[in-house]
Each structure stands twice: as structure tokens, then as C-alpha cells.
Image 1 (cartoon, rainbow, N blue to C red):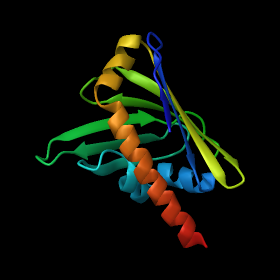
Image 2: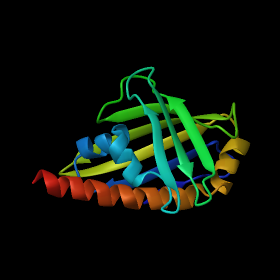
Image 3: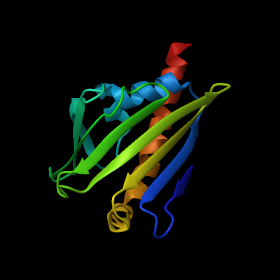
Length: 158
């Protein structure tokens, strides 16, 4: 997995390959019962409050720590989500007005899907807060759980 956060650039790019068809990755991003199985660090419980993957649809989820404190995130889908790409805004409830844009693409070749997530921020300072807030730990944990999930789904399909 590659995570790129160049100094002074309001962007984070994540690239990871999965040994699964892109349709399974798309399902993992758009089906609430699957999202709960991979998104976020292992020490947090995820509740999917809303997930409406269509143009203009809203999504919202809350991560809960062991003490029951919740951390909610929400956003909108822009364009129709497809197995090729998802475009969505992202906002943390505790930082209202700090919105960023995610473009997630799924490029498949010979059964291997390359997921690329390009996250763009309005300001470098917003990106730096995102990175300082433990982004890399959360993304690495999530991507490993996502890999485990799509591997399991691929095996079930055969």
C-alpha cells in the first residue's frame, strides 16, 4: 500500500491492490452490513447510520470508542456511484465546515483491483490535521480488514 501526503499539497493519495474483482470492493463501500466489517480501526465499533449510494444520496456513520464516545462523519455522493468510481464529500461532525472530497476508483486487470483514493482538502492545514489525527493508522487497519473481507467474499462466490 502506498500513502502519499506531500508537504504543502492539500491532498492525500492512497493506492492499494486487492486480489478481488472491483464489484466486490464496490459492494464493500456501498452495502451497510459490509462497511461495518472493515471501516475504521479495530478498537472502534462502527455504526452505519445512513448509507444511500446514489447521486445526491447521503451517508453517515459513527465510530464508538470503548467508553461509548461517538465520532460521527457524514457526506454526500456526487454522480452515480459505480464499480469504477465513487465521488463523495466527507465531514467530521466535530469539525463542521471542514469538508473534503474523495474520489475512489477501482481499476481491475486480470482479477486484481487497484483501489486509488484521492482525497482533496480546501487547505493544507486541513490536510495536516487529518494526517496528524491518526489517518495513516486508521487507513492501514481499514485496508487490511477490507482485504480480508473481499478475499472472504471472493471465496464465497466460488
